[in-house]
Length: 423
Ligand SMILES: Cc1ncc(COP(=O)(O)O)c(C=O)c1O
Image (spheres, rainbow, N blue to C red):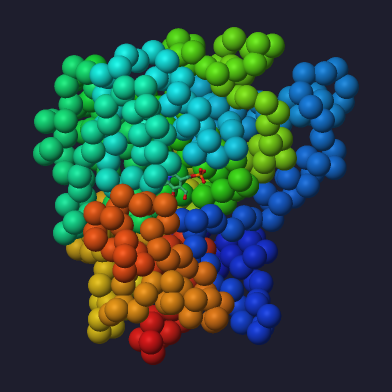
């Protein structure tokens, strides 16, 4: 067990994509983690092992079907461990967070009346806004919680005036995929529960950067996507068991009447579920190997649940150090504007995802020029339409997003900074 500071060289050899080069033999540099991370070989192996040895549909007595049942059960358990959910039956898998949220929003709305209200935030990805706006056609009122464009934090002081006894749900992001702000979920849950409203958290951008504990957060529902934390393209929705039992799912008649089967429409991405287990085990391994310093902070947890929290704490601490280094570099380049929290003593309130502009160069042009050097970033609104609109940047092409992951190195950040300086 290594107890010194985590170094990405410990894990980089496990990720085959990190030694890829482009057509000009330049090494690929992945700052596109918020769009989707690379995967370790163990995830690739688990997915191909599924297709080689376990491939079948579920619930039949023959060997491959039994192995598939075991794979699905293992994925529910792994994801319950990841979120510290009380039961694996509270985990719903689906194609992605967006599709799950559209389906779930409609199920929730079957229990609501015209005039009932939902609060969304301007800091959210559209996957946690559009499904709720779609309910306006059945008379649901959608209210918008603003954020402070100075540091891109939610205006919590305005939430109280939006909440009332008609509020059924607050739909809020765990963290912004555009500007990186981590939202104060526990405080929001307290305020929402005080008026009898439920809270759904979009944790897609938060999950790769911070250990999530649904019991501690106190929220009612939470969604995330495994491809953002070193796994395959699989979406996840967690809900309180009593709520998943109570709510009327859109389902086919022969599918189970109880969760999770009730909510998992159609045949699942079984190879993706095999990869999900491997991705979660990868994070737990990082925790077991390098996270001894964090064990005391999670004294209530054991086994994989503990190792997962340790793994994410290791990643978070490293990513914060690398992000501070990136900020130092960005701030030294004339004409760079950085959005969101930059105070060094507040970096724990954000993810290592930088949104920047460089003078008046359009972000898509920056993104294109970086790509010529093998560097993956994103430009535009990244579906965080409301954020970019609120910042007044929609016409100007949004922002350039530089997302750090625990496998990125200081040398990669230097390469990026040098290119941005030359521009
Ligand atoms: C914060 C956030 N929410 C939701 C989504 C949508 O997730 P999915 O692609 O699983 O539908 C994304 C995707 O980038 C995201 O970053």
